[in-house]
Length: 120
Image (cartoon, rainbow, N blue to C red; front, side, top):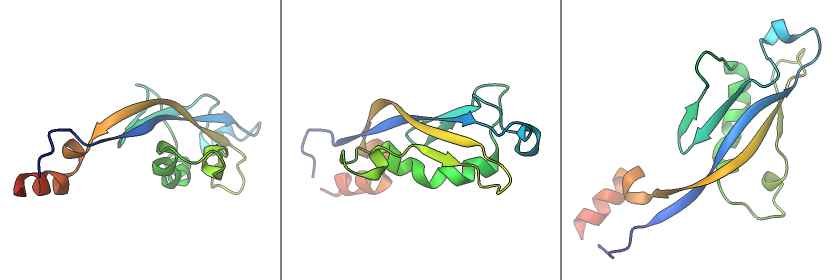
């Protein structure tokens, strides 16, 4: 089943950043303005020496694969980009930003695609 052309798809690179923290509660949830990580493909990158709350990460994680994909201009996922910390006493706000786009090749990210290609 080799067509000669490599099958590819594109995903947005993302940045998730703490953009608002309720004054006085920084020490409760350990959020700090500017705390951030980036997503490229399946990989998360946190700057060396920095941290990001695993509870805040848990709140935003389910949205990341959808935010990586191209969505219709009228889809809410194309516009809504803020997520709140899940702690009910915390008012930290995270912003998910699309910061670039990257191309991936199916045969490099899917064992099933490789198996199907070698069967033909």
